[in-house]
Image (cartoon, rainbow, N blue to C red; front, side):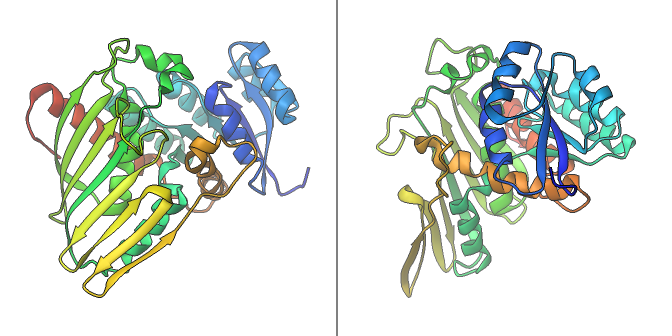
Length: 340
């Protein structure tokens, strides 16, 4: 091991931890030295696969024995507050998977607790790190479209993600909490902050406990209207994967992220476009290539944050996304616009 490598532990060895560990191995300067999982054999199997030397089924024991530079928490959201507090109490920087917490109040306590402890706190929000979404942001920053007046983000899939993550099937709050955390973060990343939210939800798959369809309309600080369409009940031509499509309309033109990772800008001068496919990694699922590949640059950015630099998705920043998620739920319950 190189002396300048940051040593870290992972809490949780469920579905996403395999991709997270594979992505960390693509990032120079970090090495996972320990895994925690309440079911030890599950952790031992993953440790053997990725060459992680130590396994624990007691998180306090892990923190007491291992010499760490940070901890990456990849457990169920209901445990995030407990584990983030546990790590912060040891004075260690902490990364937490999204959604940050099962409530806005819990998310706020996590951010405040890490602030009081003086430890860096980051949320692993990788969707904005997809290369085609970064390229779309570049098009907007070029300002060829002029001031934006309207935008739409579509995440419409027929993927039964609850089959790979069974706990999602029992979640009272499903697509807004799980995918809304991603898509509303992308909306903020691309179009800035929202001032008001209106939302409607539906449950199409009756075997689910929570909503699998949501439509979120936001009035942004810029004055633009942004609509986010989310569905796991979509039977569309492009709905077989986990792709995100975006259309932004401005006074001078439009920008679009469409199928095939194609980013296009159209003005009075015509249309220019480029294809921005994700990198290919042998460990990534080809149907989820953009999602899995985006973990690598996200981890690289987070590594900067936990080692003293700056990273994009701080706890404070992600708290704004959590606030949007729960404003959307409040709007859906009351059928009213929620002012932020």
